[in-house]
Length: 174
Image (cartoon, rainbow, N blue to C red; front, side, top):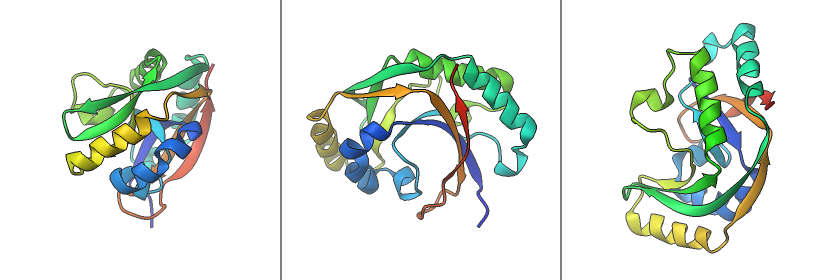
């Protein structure tokens, strides 16, 4: 089946050993085949609208932010609906989002649903709070997670179980 959505993410493979089992149970995106990541922009453009011009523009946007090191050192919450890991520093993720949205002004993070976009790596969301709390505590015991971020990733897929989300392009950071 053809992909219906696209996203720009920064994958954090170093987090997989710590969060994978929790995400598989508690984060719908994991069941779609999306790896542990910090979202830069979701939703992005419809997959059919992504052409060579879009890819070149994304490459230029990614190049404006230097590669950086990040640490996931703290568990955070959005109310009692989502448990996540906070990246430090968060600013380079915000700079990536700003660089992309400056070039694609009609595309808003989370369709403009939030006044402030908080960079985060989701552990679980929209599950019973006891399950989310247990996952957050288990993950917290294994922090910090350190990684080098040097690539922005464009992925496309469907919002349904199965491994439909695939990498469409990689863009090196500056």
